[in-house]
Image 1: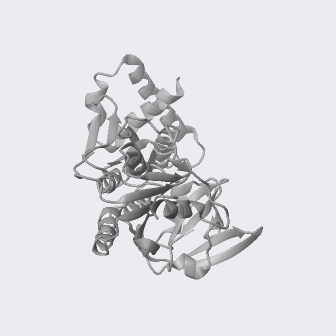
Image 2 (image 1 turned 90 degrees about the vertical axis):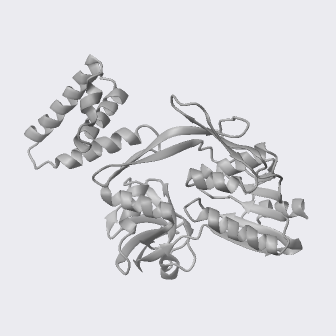
Image 3 (image 1 turned 120 degrees about the vertical axis):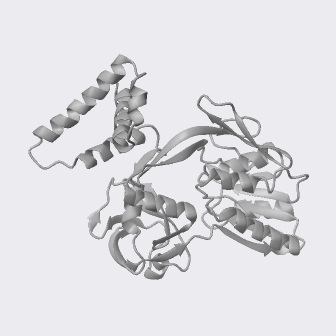
Length: 371
């Protein structure tokens, strides 16, 4: 039996179990081989339950089937349990209970990509580029980003113990969780009245925070702006479109291509470009940040400086399930205003320049351009 096909069968069967009546109407039009595969999967499930010599939790088998199916599609699709989905929602809202770190997968473990300032992790001594190898004495190798994230997060005022590998040594750091409010936008006015605007991610607070920053710039008569999207992993599509509309003149911002649907185009109504703009990007500028960067580059609303972006040109949708769990599935691809697909390719900056360990040459170049 075709592996990919069998995973689709599992998904259909699981929806049958979770959403009453779902498959009843669907299976009436299913081809005979699809019905046969559904029966085959159900027979395997029954065989495991009847023959495995130890106790079997059927819900765990179904959960594993869903995760396996969705994770096999691409790195961005997944199934989240009730507990895991709560973490996803909180992250999207920009507020959750945890320790205040940004993490990424590395060599099967979890690397601390960045530290949120003045939050519990920083106060306890966690540093950027620390490698987390255990959580509460549980080895986390190959558990995955979402699972480890849910282990680290927890109720406010409770403790979590991290095993940290740093410079060849293993450290144990105990941290008291707190309510973390992610402020995704940071801004200041530099020399020569140049506004510096950094966006860390696109959560529900991003647009309002960017508007607040731009209002401050306008009040101080700032007309030259550096938009820093470096190391921005993305976030919500709607937020990215809203931000792009603040900089891109009237016309196309992004096109969304979904299966069996006409191309959907989002446009800006901005009468004219308001700022002389330089956008900083690097290899970690991904997804929503690439929507903004791509719109600005194609519409010639600013100059991109840095290195080629990550190349995540696809959009995920969230499907809540009745029991509180959640499905995240890639459902569309986005194209830049010139209808360019950047997925797996990234966006080349107008001026390519790499930083050194000691100097931010990208920021230096942006300042030179605006001066």
